[in-house]
Image 1 (cartoon, chains in turn green, blue):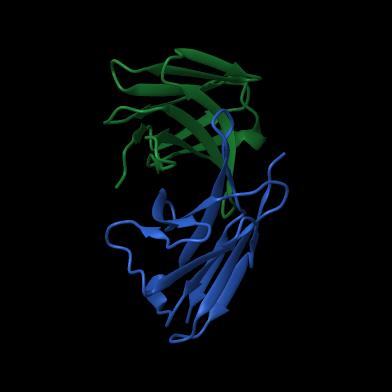
Image 2 (tube, rainbow over the protein chains, first blue to last red):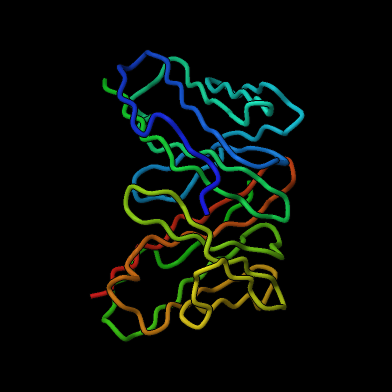
Length: 110
Length: 115
């Protein structure tokens, strides 16, 4: 079953703008991960944030985690056309099981 | 980095035939692999967890006799879609956990079309 819900479902921005995607989940987690998927391809791991962490950075990516609200956000700064893809959050519930959110389709227009 | 190689990348088959999809961990050993299914513009749904040397664990609603999983070695897991029908047409993706800190690595996926 789907654990997370993401919003927005779709996001269209101009190159250079920032893109923010949100993810909410329902149960306790060990960590939360963000993945990127180009159309018709496999997933690429972007960043993992543990349940005891609140913020993490990786290049142009910034992820926050609020366990009290059971939510996370992914910020992509200075977006590029090549960032166009679907982005998924996934919660690690323990037991080696990942549960994916519905995803956000990001389109960056050049 | 850790790589999972998935083959074939796409396959077209006739109704009633079986299709085998392979996933190999290239530079690490994967005692556990995961098989997902993804319909167009939708998220990934976990189908089953493949365990090396033992039976796979299937998610609720997934027919184990239809989706046969074999994990005979530490580097290879296979998913066989038996007696495929058009409704089985989908994108199938495997993954393996690399480490507690890194997360999971995914295969490039297999687009199955049943005609």
